[in-house]
Image (cartoon, rainbow, N blue to C red; front, side):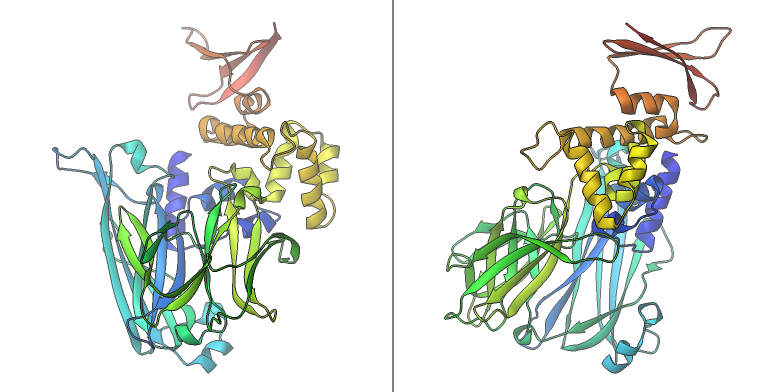
Length: 468
């Protein structure tokens, strides 16, 4: 089971599959196993920054690849503390394209065949892991960026990736990008960062390599480029929660609003990309004829785990910067990535009639009833985080990871169901009788469960349960 999970995760890296938490949440028929695969995928995103001259623009592709998706090999250097290593090569190729033709094309029809090359960049690195467990980690990442300088215009681009000892590179689907002169943009981009280190002549941020994704319940900084900034104007940043259901991204409610002051505005600065300690950084350096940015501390700890839109408007109400960000719960239980799956998994603690009731109605109604179900059981109703809900769905993940066999998915096994309902036992004892099947005894403070092996592949059946 674990081998197949890693193999499928690798496939997601190869094809550069990018699916947001919001999109997953809105899809109705998604299996738990699908969600596991998608959680382990690599992340690729792009942004634009000022180029080396006034007309050029830096086109930057960032990447974030979990170690579990890299092919590690044993390190032959016996003096090294790191027992495993993996290599990765990336190439970004950009081609000139006719804007009129691009607009007529569907995304799947985009091609680079016959187009004039406009830029090419390479990136290569080797990462090390101290042991096998680290090499299979979903919490360690290879992160970085690759960039080319482009003049304003329309382009198609592709990424080529080569992992380990592969002889052939895997090529992503061609994508399109329209480059506008940085100083002539009508709307600026908004980046997010968990850190902000301000110095006399520069400000440093960790560049988020997973797109505009922020960690759930943790504050962050929004860095907004303000094109054609006017000092006499007043500017306001607003954040609204969006619906993440189906194709609906309707604005729901404003969760944050701030009138920007001089403390938030940085004028005559130029962003510079740096790389150190395995992480890309963005420096805003003070310079002549630079650009204007707004830097705002966003109280994300007060927000729900959802999709948001952030805008900056001038005093006339015109939008001068706009972007979306999504909140991502680190170590989020897999089932909660999709509303339909989360409702389905209630079957261990809720009856069929209750589940049918929650699962009926529009997507918005289903979401509301699901949250109401857990709100009634929230041990800390005054906080955003519901510990009981998190614990329940974490138990499902544990059952999947520890009790899955070739015959049964972990949460559908007898041991999995007991674990989901009652949690970690105080004691687990295994007995190996000479003339019988292996027996496993789970002891809790008030009850005991006895399981017997039915196959030689880890399958166990509940044969006895006793209350103390």
